[in-house]
Image (spheres, rainbow, N blue to C red):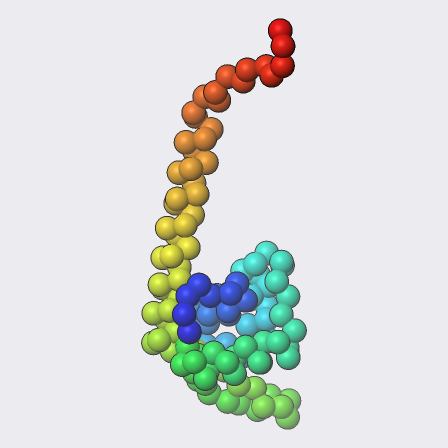
Length: 119
C-alpha cells in the first residue's frame, strides 16, 4: 500500500502500533485518536482490516471466544510498522513546511495597498 494513506487507514495502523487489539477496541481507539471526528462502523472496519491484511500491513494475532462469540485480535505487521513510520515522517515534514510558511507570513509586513481609481 502506497502513501499517502487515507486518514482512516492511518488511524487504524496507529491504533495497532502499541498492541494487538480486537475490532471494537480499534473502533474506540480510532475515535479517541481523532478526538471523535472519525467513527468507524463495524462493517467498515472489518472491510478495512481485510484489505490491510491482504496488503500485508496487518496480521491476525490471535482468536479467542468471549461470551460465545469469536474475537479476533489484529497486530501491525513489520511492513505495516514501516509504512506507518514512513507516513508519519511524510506528515511531519508537511506540518513543518506549513508551520514555517505560517510563521513567515505572520512576521512579514504586508505590502502597502495603493488605492485604485482617480485621486
